[in-house]
Image (cartoon, rainbow, N blue to C red; front, top):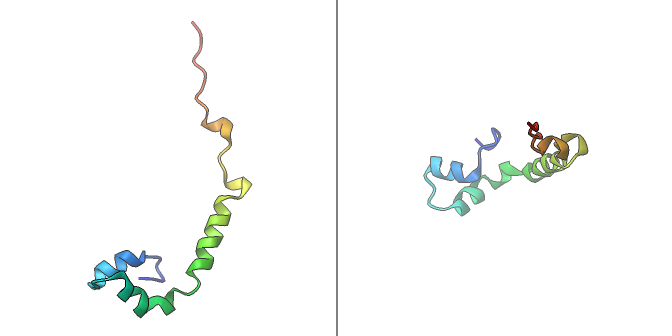
Length: 65
């Protein structure tokens, strides 16, 4: 589930752990590298080519008449 990218809170619920601490303590070693993946995804979201141009967010003008 971790390798599939499932959120730890969902894993906790699916496995019936009473606390997220239990889940993270038991399976935390499998989660190594997730921080790097998250950082890469965040970096990619800030890349200029990933941004939507502000002009495309503006409403189109209404024709007069």
